Amino acid sequence: HMVEEQHPSGLTNTVEGYGYMPDGSIDNTEGFGAFDDLGLQPGTTNLDLGGGQYDAGSRYLMEKYQVTNFVYDPYNRSVSHNATVLALADRACFDTVTSNSVLNVISHPSHRAAHIRLAWSALKPNGKAYFKVYRGDDSGVPFTEEGKYNANRGVETYLKDVEDIFGSRVRVDVPLNLIVAWKE
Image 1 (cartoon, rainbow, N blue to C red):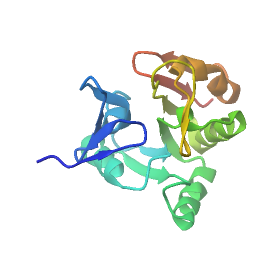
Image 2: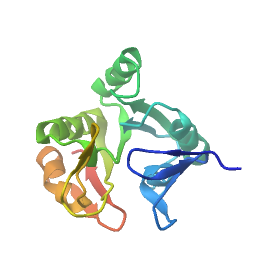
Image 3: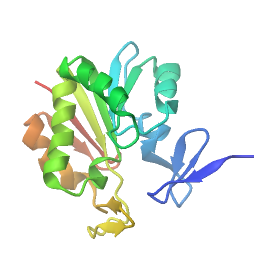
């Protein structure tokens, strides 16, 4: 029997850690599925911005990809945990940064910019940041209810936000709901 929990996004996550879309396909914007199409390299370190309260993603990245993962999440991790991770980020020591289904839940542009800026500053030179975006219903009309927010817009609409921080070394992959940005 599969244990399931309903997430605010409306997606169902199983104990395996994969999120599923209403049509039954694996969600590639959160859960384990968000990492599987990034090409992460063994022996690297990743900073997962907004990675949640549990360490299943970190265990998954180590077991499947031999990637050491650190989670920063001001809403789901303790102040001391986040301070430790931010101290590492301040040293710009990460090969990669992942932000899975986070840009789409940040309503204020300046808060979104701060999130993207943290990704940039945490990276080593030539490091890569991966921003996955959950499109929601793709209407462009934000969902707001009981403290929950989703922008309901595609990844391409966040391209300028990322370019404002990373410059021109940015590409968007709409089918993967992904923006990849490289630090100079």
